[in-house]
Image 1 (cartoon, rainbow, N blue to C red):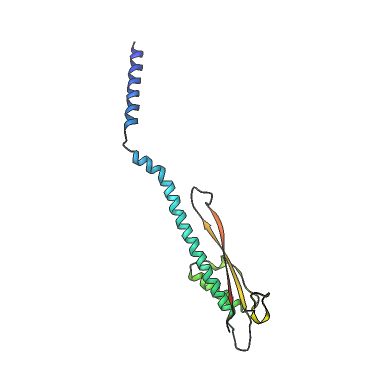
Image 2 (cartoon, rainbow, N blue to C red; image 1 turned 180 degrees about the horizontal axis):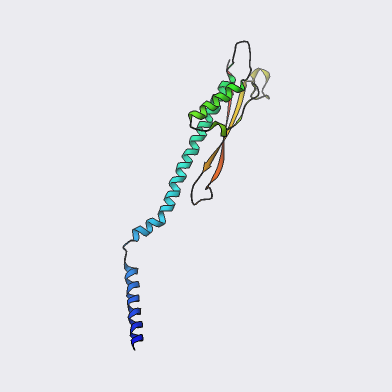
Length: 164
């Protein structure tokens, strides 16, 4: 009889506890917040890294324009249209450093010489210029996604014509 009474009391207390627990809403907000917090953090970090990638992309465009401008600038009056790769690389490196980017990580494709931009045009309509391309790796660290610890290569190409 004693064992039976113990079992009945335990079952009744256990049943009352679960009914009260199921009706109780205390702490519900905390549980919901615990479910939503990782998603919010992932969203905010994704926005941050996307903004950083856009900033790097704009800095690459600025650096490529500076490099093309430096490549087209003649170094002396008697030299003619000689492309100075050193001046171009210096201008690109300075622009990357101004944007707080590491110039050693950039892959620069410099122009060899000033050449017609569209050789299929008639001779009297051809315009000379240079094309500069810069590629830069950008790491993404967005948690809880497949993009965590991946690197994307941003590339910017600038074509600038030579003005007389």
